Image 1 (cartoon, rainbow, N blue to C red):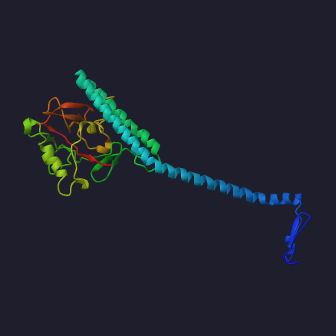
Image 2 (cartoon, one colour; image 1 turned 135 degrees about the vertical axis):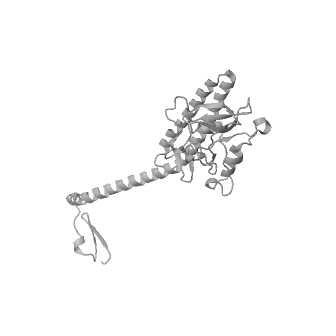
Image 3 (cartoon, rainbow, N blue to C red; image 1 turned 30 degrees about the vertical axis):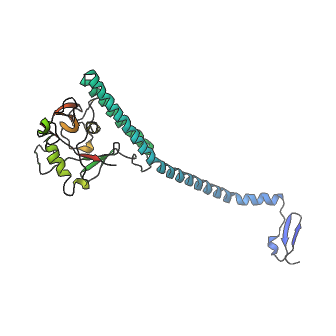
Amino acid sequence: MEGQRVRRLGWTRVDGMCEGFLRPRGPNDFAARQEEDLPMSRTLGSGLTALVVAVLFASTSAAHAVTAEPTCQSGRANAAAKYTSCAKKALAKSYRGGDFTVYVTAAGKCVTKYAGTWVKLQAKATGSGATCDGVRFVDNLDGTVTDRLTTLQWEKKTNLDGTQNFADPHDADNSYIWSAGGAGFTAADGTVFTTFLASLNSGECFAGQCDWRLPTRDELLTIATPAYPVCTTEPCVDPALSPTVASYYWSATTEVLQPRLAWVVDFEDGNVDPGGVKSVDGYVRGVRSGL
């Protein structure tokens, strides 16, 4: 009967179907069929395995990229907090013991340990495209360098040729005074502020930013190669921040025990000193909060 299914001796026939589709299905037949299908099965199996591996790899990479940036940001924040705490403890030791060399050594250890965290953060972020994935100091090609560890954006100096040019605030040879005499030579009214910083923050502003300032002592130390354990290059600074005069650079930090003095960092040997007389010339480098 048309459309009726007939089951007989292990094979199936549908009335009206081509005779060629009807054949016995015994044990030998199944074995033969498996032999025929084996190459195709292997091909499909290999392709499926490769596809699964590719999907898993892509998923892992995507997950790494998603989590890498928060991990980087968290790591930088923790490192910065530890550095700040370390620097304060180093200063406390100096004031408590009255031995300034204790501070120089302790502060150098703080800077060295802080700088060392970048390698660890970089390793965790490798291949993710996160902020920590790459070199620490990045030349922005606009006259500035960004430190991706501290998030600070630094002014890059030019024309270190032994000749001052005050028409160009970025000339590395220019030097300025911290105080012009206000409040007994303690006020921030010297050419550091009235000439140098004023020129960076006026008009269209340097690199399109109008919040350039003098770095604090602890900020300035982060770009120096500290005297501890030893600075073997001169100037003691990362090459990305060249040119740099191997001499004293002003910080914004006043020495609390003697307000006519400000802290300076010596890039000749990486030392830090609270004895910068504010009415005396010193070198400068502008900074701003970047990332």
